[in-house]
Image (tube, rainbow, N blue to C red):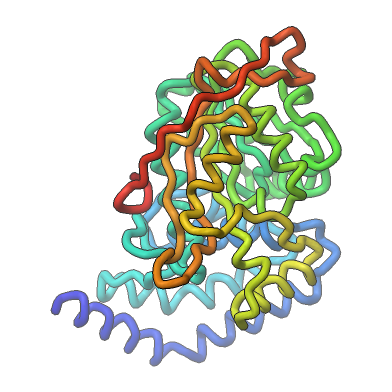
Length: 355
């Protein structure tokens, strides 16, 4: 009953202030449309927006996200603040948070709410695994700001790997936002064309010590060969290394439904078409485990997104895989290593997002 009352108050406030929301939306989208040649990846900006709104609502502290979004060249700070002001006020009056921005996110994850669910899953993975390692690598970092929220002990070395153009824009915008990036080592690399691990080692990654790799919102935009190559390179790192990542299945790539047709059209129009998905044949987790095993990794945690009952197929998932004693795959960056095939992965499906 309390939730119903809070939601009612929240939406009443937002309806009354709808003209402000619409004005902010027009200004925001207008800037997005007029500043096209900014070098800002649309798929990289989406997750940043989710973290920005969570920060604005006061449910997940991320000052870097709050400052970085409004510094982007195709973003109107006034438009964003006007758009979000009624939602923030409604939350403060009622305590209610729209499902799209809840943190920690709980329950079933539909495609519309996957951004908040992703934030919850990866934050939990970092909290759980980072204390055991001293190297943190964000692959395809985009506008991720987790490297600016390191553990208090400051003992973790942070690396960001991304396409040269996106990374150059980010570094410029970090400076514009007044964010200190001296604690982060930036490595520019094309996942589909270059040996990013060799570049990472040259930049200071200790290949003899385990690392936590975060690979968020990237695999679906790469060719299968690049996905497998990335996983094999991770498998070639030190025993105890962990990778947390998300993926889609082949269902979004093949679906004739309106939502997925629009999603494919949108990413293609932005120059970042969807390319790769895990086999959606139920249970899709088996296809994921087989892929990881073939690349030398062990699946240790997985969360399927979407139902796999009554003929329905999952549309994606979140996962964590590890490098263990049986996962030693040769990498150009680690010449001289022995090769061995990974053992049968142990699988654990958490009851909720984040385990």
